[in-house]
Amino acid sequence: MNSDTDPNGAAALDAAVGFALPARHARGRLVRLGPVLGAILSAHDYPAPIARTLSEALVLTALLGATLKDAGGQLTVQAQTESGVIDLLVCDYRAGELRGYVRFDAERLAEQPSQPSLFALFGKGYLAITFDQALSGERYQGIVPLEGGSLGEAAEHFFDQSEQIPSLVRLALDREGAIAGGLLLQHLPAGEEGRERLHARLDHPEWDHVRILAETISGKELTDPALPLDALLWRLFHDEEEVRILSTIPLSRGCRCDHDHVRSVLARFAPEERAEMADEAGAISVDCEFCSRVFPFKLSDLEA
Ligand SMILES: [Zn+2]
Image 1 (cartoon, protein in one colour):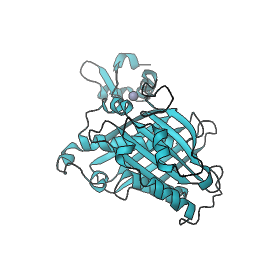
Image 2 (cartoon, helix red, strand yellow; image 1 turned 90 degrees about the horizontal axis):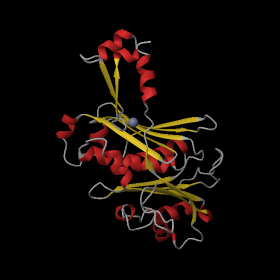
Image 3 (tube, protein in one colour; image 1 turned 135 degrees about the vertical axis):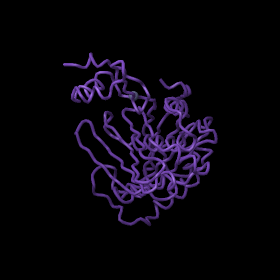
Image 4 (cartoon, protein in one colour; image 1 turned 120 degrees about the vertical axis):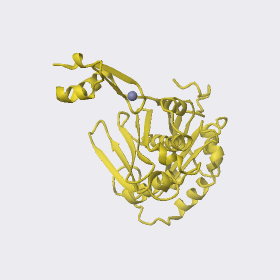
């Protein structure tokens, strides 16, 4: 499943590692994507700025998804905009599987410099993060404006505003856009369980201490395929009393589109509406926006 895990189990690519710094009441996740990123992007033919934005969003999705306690839960990151080059960006995570796509205006993108700002890409946009817990059926959604210089900054606002958890988020891509990595570090003085958190003071010294250590992480370290994630943690926090590795989750590309579901969606349309969707030969083809898989149907197969 994950061929880039070395025999010692020290994952370097396509994995999320959870960790805790118990003495500092901090927890975090490290993620690095390699082949999974290539697999997701290969279903699309995105220009570089769009591919890079989606890559960062996928890392963010993996960082947040890996915090789900319920293994069957789903985490969705969605960016919606009113006037940006990007109209919609959606990524989701379930049980280690990632997928995502972007809808954008190619003509307007062509007018942008080669590395457009977050504002140029998203305009007046919003970032919605949705946690769906499968077992409890609980659903929680937080929405924050897409502000700041990067998706990572917008995610920090999400935690500060919606969750009121002091957080550090770093997202990085290598020059070729083949490897992406990210770090999420959070201060949870009252533990991760429950809503009662003693977080009110954002200037907590133990948080400042670990935040400053975590801020030394470089984009090169986050995307270095030769540097196992646990070795990177050790490099950041080796002076701490204890760095506890909580879990390593292998990540893969996964899409949940299926023939029967697409058929059931089409079947809900009125026959006249389906006729309008069909081509001259009486065929409707629906493609999955996430993975580009094409589902062809004949009108005659959809009747009754
Ligand atoms: Zn699909």
